[in-house]
Image (cartoon, rainbow over all chains, first blue to last red; front, side, top):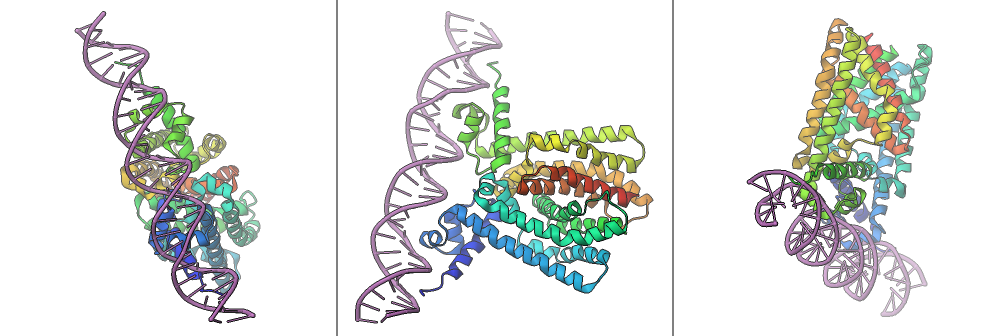
Length: 201
Length: 201
DNA sequence: TTTGTATCAGACCAGACAGTCTGTTACAAC
DNA sequence: GTTGTAACAGACTGTCTGGTCTGATACAAA
């Protein structure tokens, strides 16, 4: 085996993720990614056949980390309590408490940058995003469904309510972007928790 | 006065809005806007000095329509009832009932496309977006505040709760984009209404 | 030592891009 | 009718972009 190129590949992905989240995919040139990652054209096109393939690789890595994050939080709250109400509320609180770090690392979400440009969805990125969204829904919805049935609230759809957490994340990212104030993320997660507490009570 | 060019300008804005919402701003070339609007390079750069100025004009028109939509809905619900709970719930229901038309006209929100590219925020577009967001917050928050105070729920911030409707809109647009299923918009607005009904009860 | 190959480095290229420039046309004021 | 000007039309240009190509270099197997 020759020298290991995965380090370079990761450096390129790191730089590209930052730039794409910040400026969008089309507005991020391959050259700027090369500069930011201190690599070269040769290195870039050795690891990624086209710019589109970079997009696929970015989403793949990002979605995997996202789902891992989800399962970590789920494991935490299911271990802490057997009460589905406490589990659901604690689940939201995990992200509420870590909102600042979550926003500090990245001022927005890669999904938004990718989904904004239809050409990329057609290039096979949206499947992976949908997988992640479904994982979030299927992680949270069963807990919610248990409570909603026990409370006799069949008019509230557990899947849609689970989706609402994802919706809040993405919407809050947009809100933060507009004002540049990352505190909206924590505030919106707080609101969702309070609404959940109310409807599950 | 020579012939009226506002019709051409509007045609360009219409085409650009569609293309930018669909593909993003950077991925939308001036030439494609010209083709789509059946105009010409001369016409385009007569009405817009640069592509950036097109972005400003797009946001200006879009935000104005957005705020007009808000005030229309507000007027409807405040005329229909004096009860702030009914007003708030009816307000969400207005959009819930018209979600399909709202999504049919445009499969996403221009704000997302613009805010995704930081360069445009620096070019003076985000101020107008923030103005629209503040208008939504200030339209809804007073109604919510009245109820929250009457119900003795000081832990819930009325401004953040008002913002949550905007957050839901934008987040739902993202969700719809990922799966291509526009029904998520209605479902998410339904969830927000149900959550509101619960917390304001 | 030789050979093979993954990993790069960077000059280079064809096309696309935003923006310019030189006109032409419609219409209004006088 | 003459003149002025807003409203175009479309050829043209310099720069940037994604992508290619020719090598160089490290390292592993034989």
